[in-house]
Image (cartoon, rainbow, N blue to C red; front, side, top):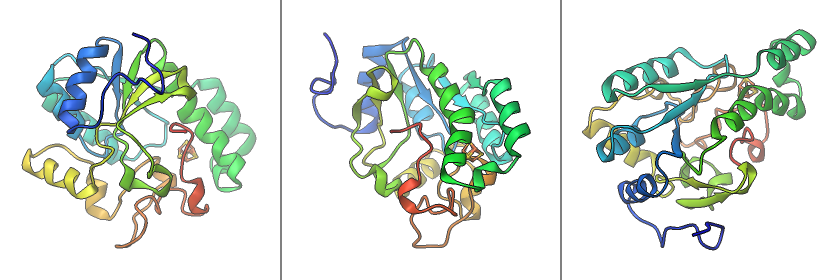
Length: 230
Ligand code: SF4
């Protein structure tokens, strides 16, 4: 069966566990979770379904310490091996030598170039050969994600299937599940962070702020995406 935008292969929406069970049955072993280690809800759900899941993450070279701690706790707790992907060395060296270590603060174009080199290119390599990938994206994370669906066709990455099991969950549900199962999570959440990326481009927010207000806070709200999810 050929999957496309009209026929994503899953008839409707479901609980995250139901979506994951369908996805892992349909696409394994050509499916992987892209983990940013804000929390480990999806890893917990997936390893309950099958232990041999694939989990990858992008080390941009500028991640906060707390993200690595969460990743290490997850690797131990769930007995998984995380596939780390790194930016191409020559691209990072050229960027930093020619434009400096904080070039991303100078303009939207400069910021997008840094994200392209440190995130988007390694992500493209991580997705190569997969038929489907799983993300932790949710509608409540940002205005730009209001139309997110649990199953999408990812035209930006060769038309593979993109699965967002938590699309309709809220931050509160993620926190409650994390507490109920005593899961590893990113400790920056205890310090007022609500969306976590590179350390130099992320900060804590005030109660009531948009959840992604702490990302690239010097830019206007409509630009709060790094190019991974377009
Ligand atoms: S989030 Fe900031 S440091 Fe990280 S890749 Fe994007 S611009 Fe560069």
